[in-house]
Length: 442
Ligand code: SF4
Ligand code: SF4
Image 1 (cartoon, rainbow, N blue to C red):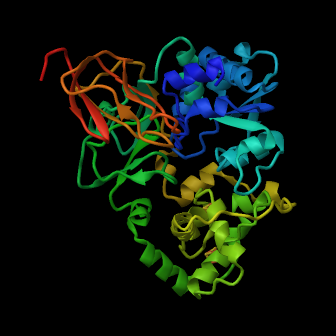
Image 2 (image 1 turned 45 degrees about the horizontal axis):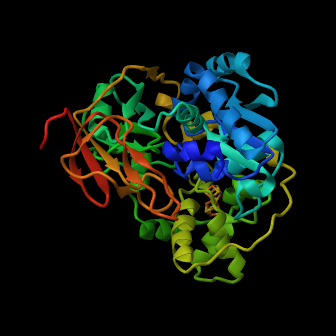
Image 3 (image 1 turned 30 degrees about the horizontal axis):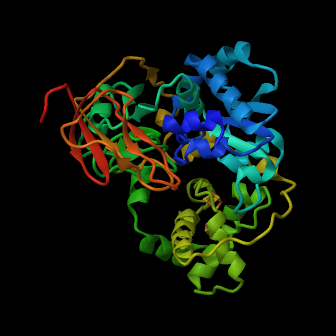
């Protein structure tokens, strides 16, 4: 492991864009291009654009370290034209080999394979990773965490947008492990039977069933919507009813395939054929079904393309689970790019309107730089891809912010976990370490 990767590893940096892949592993590879994915294409989220505007020098420093670590000669910061504050703030900080690439305001501009295609013209092979084509992609918050790691500061904070039907939409930075209820309070909100919450973006985020759940390194946002909102009903529906709907009403119009972002860049993913195969229990060509493995679950087929309310995404996700459990790997090759690809990209606003989110699409979320601290934090030992961290503290131990509390198991893929507040360890389980504010023994 090179020196930069080692420091990134020590600080517990993981992909903050949602996946939580340990960043030091990416930094230890060789690449030609490093891309900062600042597209933030999920409607309503504001975090990355606001962080880029407030911490441009940290972001550029993180990018510079990523380029140095991977040997990349080119650094691209991918932003949408409407992120003017971020663009203006970043421009004076750019270093040789770096440039800002302005993306169209389409969904899903932030899907890694699509960001790469839009910014470089390169296409990630289906089932492959960006490194296969010499590219490493990092999220804005990840690279800010990298810059802080180089100053010896571990990851103890997470910035997230709280929006939707809350009195005061806000982008806040909180200690990792803060309960979502406390985060919601910062936006003037509280639990209510009439309100449902989504952790992350409205499309790919999951329903929050327990607001005492803690913020992790990958918590993308907290979105409050009316409990009877169609999006909430959609997320609540079980896979049986999804398949039943598909069986009853699929008219094989092919719109889901024609607009599928992965399909248009040449991945052999045809959701209309997968739906047909599932409907008639006709597996036919096995490659057809294993293509579910290369679905990004962007949801465009479900939220925008299908005229009759079917969710090819959910069918793909269910198939993916079964195929992975059986150890099946996708073997297909990259096909031709759709010559009409450019015209099949869907504006984000139209996606938001179709999802019933237009009322909140332009809603601002004020950025708070206050240093909020809850009374207790629950530090999950599995906030990342790989093996859970192993506790290195015990109940009653005093800890200070930044102190190591969870170590990567020997020889495993994983990420370290650090105390996010000063206090006393009040609980240790294989899942989480709880820290209570203050220095008194429990
Ligand atoms: S969710 Fe639908 S549109 Fe998105 S990649 Fe999968 S099949 Fe294509
Ligand atoms: S868009 Fe809907 S109706 Fe048309 S083929 Fe796809 S799943 Fe069937």
